[in-house]
Length: 489
Length: 103
Image 1 (tube, rainbow over the protein chains, first blue to last red):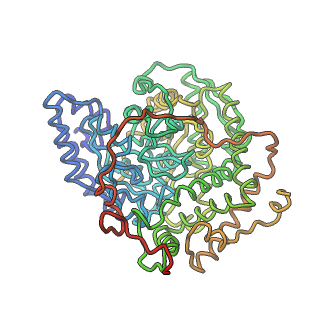
Image 2: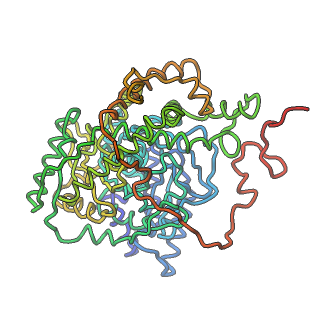
Image 3: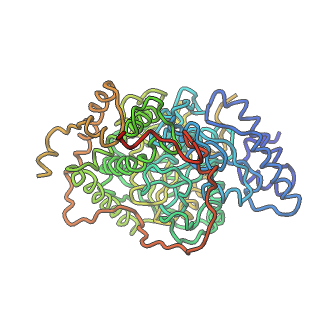
């Protein structure tokens, strides 16, 4: 018996479409049908436009019939996190502030997916303005982890991760400021890649922390991450922080012959708070790499325990500045209770933002305020330099660094909702590389006894996405974690 | 001098900061945020243990400077597109509360 279409990878769907064994209308229809069946349990989507998806699918089929197919993503549906602009679709960032906002333009990544022939499918739930680690900060709904519906899918790209893990989309785009692609990918048992800062355009990505934000692929397999990254990466003149770097053939890197890679394991990532089952899975992965001829050695990243405070100072400072634009005047929620134009700002923002966003605006405004700037913001930027230096030193001796993606598997809904610091600690392994601008990816490396996915993180040199994909592909080729499906009936 | 005020238990004047951020908070939010942000600021104290003498700050991991664009004409939004999400519109303009005082 062959697998249903919604369980196939991006690569396999692309092959069947190219061989005309199946049409995009059939493939897209299969994902819409699967979504209708399981979305009531998972609640990953904030908005679904089935008619629009099917129209895109028919247009793809017509292109192929005319001999104008655009490549490996032609006709396959891709889910989009609700922080990335798609023309004429909602762009709420899971916030009341943008509840009625309809995007007047496409993000660059959206344009590139269209140019690659992909079918843009749905608006995926997230923590409000990408601030959170559980998707519980969405103003609209909580998303369930498909592996255990009582647990969180991770965040902030929790809707993207849950949709892919539940077979409602073969792949999705997420965004990652401190782990928001990798942490939910790990907790939902899929692959997530945060590119080097500047490798993927941020044009049309609603800004959270501009010096840290990157868009990246969330997929079932390493090969699919390579395909999707290839479609969205590359210089964009509309993003002034976009870098003029060549885009290598990532798919070829995944399939390349095994090299004797040198892998570093930072002892600072294996201390207090690391769950024993997660530790055991990572140690097994290390043994696997050694068995495949890789050299594994200890490395030291001595400023690791400072990454969390540095991150929350820099990210909230940038957020407080970026979110000043939501003022009730031009395109956001507007309070009807305002007494005058200044009161309009105060009340519109009070009504439009949820608690975590308010908390971060207050913190970010405080660390930038007169008298505290040097003590917090400037000092954090200096320690950021030290954190980058740690990685630069480590990469003199190793090709990549291997760590757990998260300290524990997925936690329960509500478990950390009232303790922001405990929630922030769930990103403790992922955020240091955003500060350093480095690429990182998470891939499935095991399951807990309770059946929850465990992820491992690979961190690379700047622009070494191809190395990460090769190493991840080497691991995937010796394991079957990526072939398992969440037990949704 | 920095070390002196940072070594005290950090407190945050939520009223003052909320005013800077143009954000109305309820009494309940103020009390909760003051307690939670106090914990977070205490955690940030870790940064004082590290010597940053002579260390340059990092604003961007890979800074790019002087990005220039060709001076070519491009189409932008139409008025209707630009105003589509505005909360209140009249005569192709966004309506806001009166900004000037009555004479």
